[in-house]
Image (cartoon, rainbow, N blue to C red; front, side, top):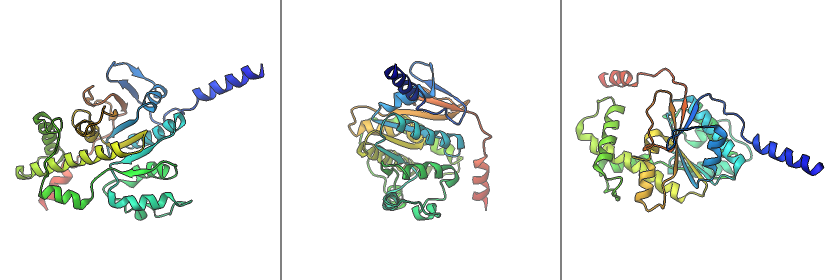
Length: 282
């Protein structure tokens, strides 16, 4: 009887290993079109050597879910590494030094030289959680000096998939839209080169990282048909990473873009273009 009770308790503990996510929403397996529970999603992601999570940078729900996902995956198996688009190589020594400390400083963003372009109130909880874990937190982006060099002299990009005309056309369209049509056409090739060099760097870092590895990046970087997964295949990876896209309800996420999509409640959109136009007119 005691053995049966212990077995029942262990089964119950396993079933409760993943707390309910703190954000409402729905998850869809894009290959089958079927709904997936958070627990089942975690089980599927847990067996993948590499996972990319695409986010909407200014959506607080997405960052809350990322932290939850790290905790939930950690309950299933040991995490190998976490990579962030938001960290650059020059910040890596700072990150590594912090991981040796028993307590975190009060001025953590300053110690990390955190870029003000990434809202710390959104990213801070994920970074603080990761720094307290045993696995490495790794930079996945380019340094500013590298971006400037690639902008001035775009290097040749190796690989048939990432060089496809259809891929570059879609990315150019996204760059135009994200800059509200304010960029001169003469700058577009350089901007495209920087975008793809960012994708290439993230792909390289993800391939080098201890597995199971998880990359947090913007949705366009995470897309299977345009971003990091495409570059990984061009670099010789045997398979693309599993991609989970975090997207607001009403977004169009297709099987070509991701393997799973987690739809979160739609939020009020900000008119970034109005702000950019106002700044350009000053």
